[in-house]
Image 1 (cartoon, rainbow, N blue to C red):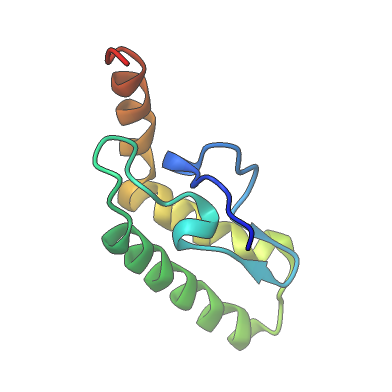
Image 2 (cartoon, rainbow, N blue to C red; image 1 turned 180 degrees about the horizontal axis):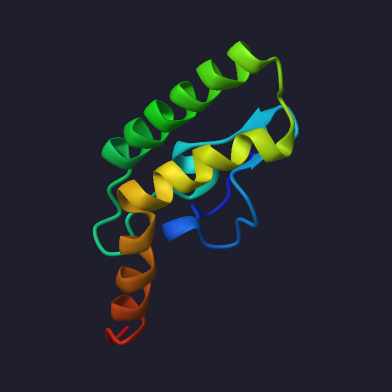
Length: 94
């Protein structure tokens, strides 16, 4: 069996989209750094991904550039909260 730590707040993830790919939920680090909750954020990211994929299907463009709206949508929805939460957690005692 293999295990790995979860990426809180997108920690260590350079991008959640690329050429012909989008990741969301635990794989993309869509986990709240304070609460550890990720189901709700994963579902919001999946909605953003599905909306972006529908646009990609209509245009026939599955490039990295066409995946950028996915990133923008989830960042607007909950991503900016992760940055503030990460800063706050860094001040908490061990």
